Amino acid sequence: MASIEAKIQQNPPQKTQNVFLGTQIFMRTFTMTATLAATWVTVTNKQTAQIVGIEFDARYNYSPAFTFFAYANAVVSAFSLLSLFLVFFFHRKGSNPANYFILFLHDLLMLCLLLAGCSAATAIGYVGQYGNSHSGWAPICDHFGKFCKRGTNSVVLSYLSVIFLLMLTISSATKSRQILV
Image 1 (cartoon, helix red, strand yellow):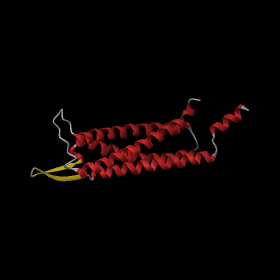
Image 2 (cartoon, helix red, strand yellow; image 1 turned 180 degrees about the vertical axis):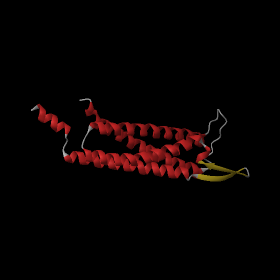
Image 3 (tube, one colour; image 1 turned 90 degrees about the vertical axis):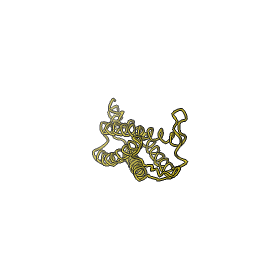
Image 4 (cartoon, rainbow, N blue to C red; image 1 turned 60 degrees about the vertical axis):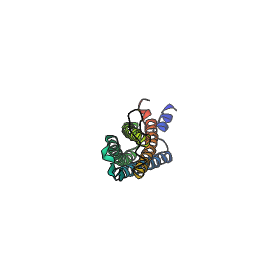
């Protein structure tokens, strides 16, 4: 009796595996497209404004935080595509908890990288929107409205990807916990 229960736990029903695969494909595809869109919006974000007769440019690469944000999104997008191929490969090999542990580590690293990029962009965006009176930094979003709006949209897309990466991390950790049993 105990050996039959062990076999059932090792090999979940095919329908459960297919639902899990479909969920993984959806979340990884969404993460990949959202981070790719956030990268594109950030990299193409620029605006020129005249302030007191002087022309100023606003571009993402003028800020190291926005540059890091764009690169973090690009890396997460590329590695999400790679992980999509890994999910297909692991599904064909069978349900091995060690494979899902690799995906867990991958998802966790991508989550940390993207969250760091989002945090950096959010901090600079806050200063751009509200300024910092203690440092003498004036808000710039009243002069560069389009730039700030596109930056906000990019950060929102990235935070949605963070949520999906968190769900992927939890699901991969749940599937890989059978290693210790």
